[in-house]
Image (cartoon, rainbow, N blue to C red; front, side):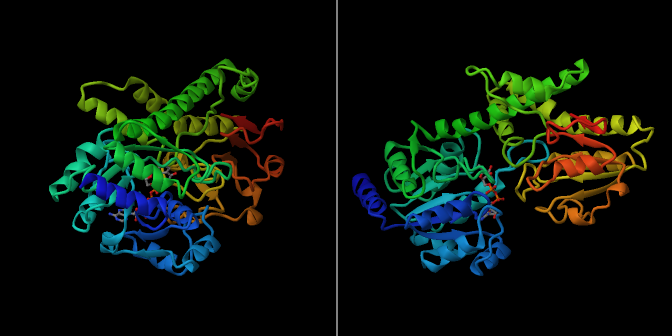
Length: 436
Ligand SMILES: NC(=O)c1ccc[n+]([C@@H]2O[C@H](COP(=O)([O-])OP(=O)(O)OC[C@H]3O[C@@H](n4cnc5c(N)ncnc54)[C@H](O)[C@@H]3O)[C@@H](O)[C@H]2O)c1
């Protein structure tokens, strides 16, 4: 049984005579779907969001990196279908699950989306399919949580059906490293599962990196993002210490970066943002807690990183104080509310905490972000276009996200006070500039 189902599926995959179903067409699932279609594979994309499916069906993208043209070209191949109906996946050969893995308010993993995806699929699975989980999650999710649900339906993993974990590493906004040229880690429940998943991805990515288990693949992803979180936290703490010492942290980092070995630069900022770096390490610490182990570095990094928005507010208060103004009643313009430059994603952005604290202290806020016309957390705020800005309307400007379209010298020339959390004013000198 094993060999024949494995061989049949493997042959279909190798000869590109197979269909991939993608569950969740967000920042991860949609670009992956496009890569597969462009690799000549047939794709059925499923999302619970009717508005997303309606938009894609009209050839309109909702992800900044993915152009309408790209969606339309994919649709025109007739190899890309989208639907809200998970039953459409009963005949596909490979199913990739790309649903969100956020945190609950308690900072415990919120597994609702993974569970609803796999439970929704369970009745439509058939012998000889491969299921790959791509959502970032704690080690053990694939074999402790997903595997029993599939096996309850009478399947035997590695025998009648195949299961693997392959973390997505896509970096939205990064034009140099895309899904295609970023190596893909693949860990199956059995060696056959790994082999099938690697062969599947060869149609969408240049390089796959097989590892010995799904758990290894799960921890690899968390290691990568915990590495970033901790190193950013160290850069943030260095910035706090350098500030107390009266030293420019940005100059220190530039100087340290000249060391050709044993150092790689990380930069301080207004706080962590996005759905990955602030979230993923908590999946690992939660899992470790269940094994009676406290993930100390993760906890400390989180403490420092989450304190940064407050530090930014203090810098703004200090800057206003230098011209005998108080935060209360001051008009403050926030530049950039996306969590990183040149993308339209505001999830977990430090702009939220900075603006909330400033508003609580009585500041009168406005913002510009061409990528985010309206704040998700408070729709009464709308982005003010740069060309209509009246600089004299603001007592201070705070650069939270350094979008490429900001003309920094113009900002420095016109703003009364600039609090620069990103070293956007590098090389410019003015008593009105206050760095992190
Ligand atoms: N965005 C990134 O840069 C990035 C990078 C690497 C890894 N990841 C990880 O990838 C996963 C997905 O993240 P994302 O940013 O694409 O999330 P997203 O919110 O952009 O997209 C997820 C999609 O899944 C859909 N969905 C939810 N439940 C569903 C269900 N039961 N059936 C069908 N569709 C469903 C949602 O409607 C949404 O469109 C997460 O685990 C995330 O941590 C994200």
